[in-house]
Length: 229
Ligand SMILES: Nc1ncnc2c1ncn2[C@@H]1O[C@H](COP(=O)(O)OP(=O)(O)OP(=O)(O)O)[C@@H](O)[C@H]1O
Image (tube, rainbow, N blue to C red):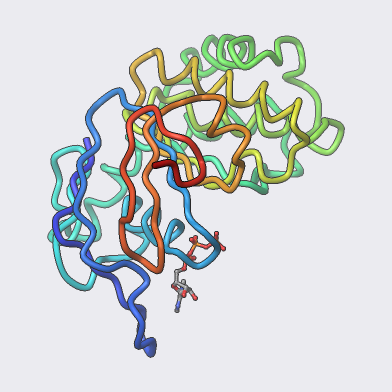
């Protein structure tokens, strides 16, 4: 699903690399937490997965594709198999909940019939049945994140990438969001989630990858947030 071989990334005009010689593999169906202090390289890692950035040295494979060699016009083909969720939800404020989710299907050319049938189903799945006509601004933060997850999941991506999805939510709401991501993972979607949320990581006991100054310093199955010897 994901393979990093000796991946380093140095941004232009920077001397210190944001990622240094990272090698790892994530298998299909895994749930992985990416942890590390601010500036440790988590977002850079996710940007490489999305091919928003290319690595400076090494190779990044996602879904069998070498992203460094992938020509720009092929990037959308890979991206369409990836779902993304962010801390700040990134919903379209002038579209209804249903339209936000439908939009993700429209951009990949799904038929109106399929969209009409699928949108309510996926909103039910995320616990927002009946809220199709609401505007994002009328919803709580947790509900908005559920819409974002519905949108990320509606095309059944192979891989879901979440960057601090609970960062703006209170602990109870965060637990609900994690249950949802866990459910999505159980359908077979691989999940990679960057987080600072120690409580969540400690509760879920999934694989934990820790970065420190761009280096991979820990890779633990059923891990916890902090160091554990
Ligand atoms: N576009 C950029 N140009 C130059 N340097 C960057 C860029 N993006 C990130 N960096 C640098 O790369 C390093 C890693 O940053 P990154 O955003 O990947 O860390 P992070 O672990 O996601 O941090 P946070 O938890 O605060 O989001 C930092 O030193 C940062 O300043």
